[in-house]
Length: 261
Length: 343
Image (tube, rainbow over all chains, first blue to last red; front, side, top):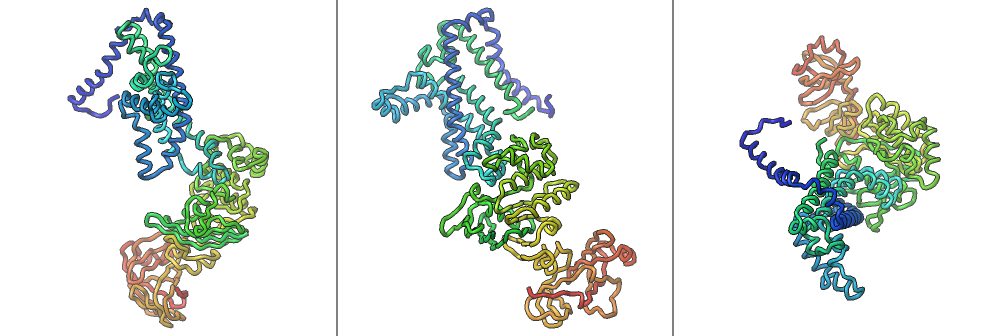
């Protein structure tokens, strides 16, 4: 229900804004070749792209959990300038155009990159245009969502739980594992889901840094982009899949993340 | 076992400077108004905040800022009980009580719970407990670890009045059986007097009084303690048989000595009259009744004037004198009812 009285012009503008969101979705649903959804989903290229997308996004989320939770912990326990700097660094990928992120990743991990060059020279390891590159690109873009969610959870956490545990003789590791981590579970869960959704939809950094190699780096968004040229029906079906996933996440997280019951 | 603490904490305009020695078997209540630094003192003793100075417990140096030594909270063997239980919400009661134990945690925790009559709550989650039960379990959780120093931060103040007495009894029993050093922070004088055998009064970051409860309340040295004891406290300069009060008035009081003094007058010793009394009381002033407060069989009248006092009278006296807020009265205090001590 709309509870307060809102001036008519504002209502009209709000409706126009809503249309901007709704029309493309309506187009997608209206033009979907519903009789082809089954065959398209089962087509080998689609299945490969879907499988790769799931593998890359889940791996990226796992890496984000392992690295992002400690990062959030450090962020939440830091104050002053250092905190401002760390925070800007960790949230940068959220505002950076993903293509720029991809370029930056090449300059870091590419064959002549800061870390890429020694890796290649010493071990012959090459990262760009591999599945690892797709995973790194997705982690780069998606991890901030997890860090922000977990940091928020940490700041909201009553510090006295940790103080009580310490006074009971628990080492800092035991406090983290037995008290902090379990109490953070809701924040970690919603952060991980948002992170995974962002990783699943990643396009710009992936295509720039990992390329568009079917079976190796061609995830669903990249496959949609390619299919648009060759067989639009396939593109629409894949788009519907991503739309369904995004909707499912938003509805599932409604209570936990968006605040209102 | 002894605790010797010389603690200085400075931060954003607030300074705590406390020198405290406590022996085992003693329950010390740290009493003071809000913002006096009571909780800061506890947190400093627990090692949760950095300090200047030195803390020594049972011969072990826990803090020594000159030597750069700081033993972290988890290695101090101090027990900390908070205002509201702070039980870990994701662990059962049994897991909470056993949390601080290294070996045989569940067996020992269950024994303690059984002994306290809380055995049937072992499997419960903290949210299923009443406030009183939760606080009793929080106390057990700390006591099972056999701390050398027990720090209680207003352990009863978050409880409903109805359960407070019950938890206070339990606390009193547990404190009696506890071997280490006990420090209780409170702003509730009743709690302090019921549980402690020594009061340390903290005001604006410093100790203003320290001693057995009867001694502290008999000779208040601050407004806070005077209010707590329910007496009038006046300050001034002793001149043998009278005191020159800080307000400018002169008050007759025998054996006032020389120099700065405190004078305590019990509200019952303050008599009120409608017209200027002619008689033996030598201290007679004009005053105005500000407000009246019924306490049991007595009415406390707060008076403003050259000498601000509280008088305690009977309800019938209030009727006879037509006392009400704003009423003008004469106040008389017998010199012999005034107790004077150096300040």
